[in-house]
Image 1 (cartoon, rainbow, N blue to C red):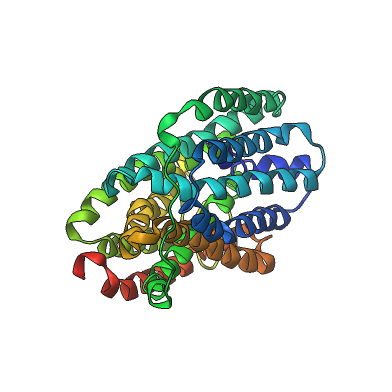
Image 2 (cartoon, rainbow, N blue to C red):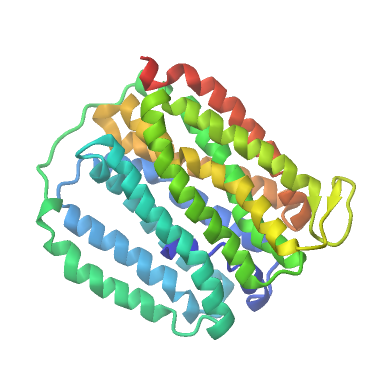
Length: 372
């Protein structure tokens, strides 16, 4: 929840800080890129760390205090620093969380992802409502309260203490089998990243409220939460690569339809439909249909990576999550640096990334652990 509040605040904070859409988007992409790139290092560390209590206490308090302190700054660049600290701390958490979630059985990762996605889904509608009502005043007290909860609970959890062990060294062949999966996740991340930042901005152009811009992300993530949970269990039966394939194909088809509909009250050359009536429900339905399928493979892709490198599970998780996300953010950063101020163009070319993700999903099918 803490790291989900930055994207839906785009339409609000660009006005507060007097920055362009491109500057705001590029700043978020840059912070996510930088923090995600180091996640494989955190993955290697997580395979070795025995003092999980201390580790989790540090990274969780870092996330909460920095994310919810954005209400205290009037400077855009201080805001960027706080976002970076929150993203960096969150990046440090994910590999450890993933191996802890699969310590009993692989399918338990679905519950870990389910709870995380629930918070990620609630964040957008909460923060847009809070910003509209209070202009973010007092938000930092939430971070302080959560930090107190962490300090009173995490250090006391005995099951977090494990014996220190030395995982086997990584081989080039071991990394190679993750390459197509990495590229698939990267393009899936680029597809979803563009939609999540520019979707609320597009909603504003369509004349919809800030809360609607947050609601589309919340509805998408709640839907995606259920799809992610389902994807793991179906993947166990038919193979995770088929989940990736279906996820990419659905995103591609829906993003093409979304690009053909114009909600901006101005018909453009690439628009074949203009829905001026019941615009809110049409917008919400088409946006959710485009973005939610990406979550279908969210957990299954991480499970698949762990299965391909079972003795380096945290590192494999960091590849399927952190490094894949960072490459997606790099793609978003480059693309938005050129076209970022043109919100309409950004949302109407999302299908390009979805098409590329489908291509890499097809390549990855030959590596599926269920087939080996």
